[in-house]
Image 1 (cartoon, helix red, strand yellow):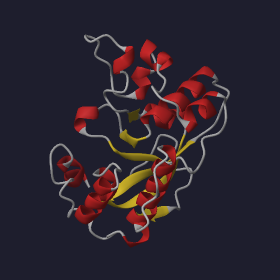
Image 2: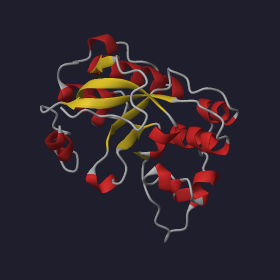
Image 3: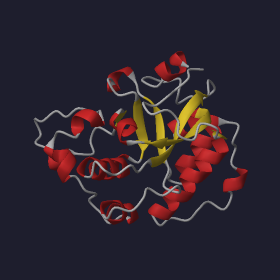
Image 4: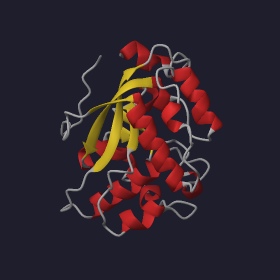
Length: 210
């Protein structure tokens, strides 16, 4: 297993989490964010089986795949420099860019583009006004993070869930260099070789690199 380390190191390096801890935290936050019910049988989900867990996530309209594909996770706090080493979802800026414009994926390069300064969610969210107004990044809004794929280079990490929160929070940190706030998240550390999702391209390389 590789030793993943951010540019500033892990600020909370002692907290290792299992799959159940992270999936439950994600489901609770995502359900609240989207105003959906938390599954009544959540405690009884098949935590040891990544493929059965993927089915439960899909059945209850949560994002499957990576979050079920890691056995262990690391709780992390991400500084401004850490966030700049992350890539975000490719299509999040499509409403703010021309069809011919090709944007980088890594945030250290995206911060120099107008779309980074212009972007905002296309529907009301609990986090946009909160982060824009200068409030701290809450612990119960965890980012879901994995190591970057080769296609996402030069990024070291990819924001699997929370790209919008990251853009808003990093934009604020860039606009106010005196701020020293951190974002909260979970980094996938030990992938599950039994996960059918992880065995498929392009994510197979995450198993090979482990």
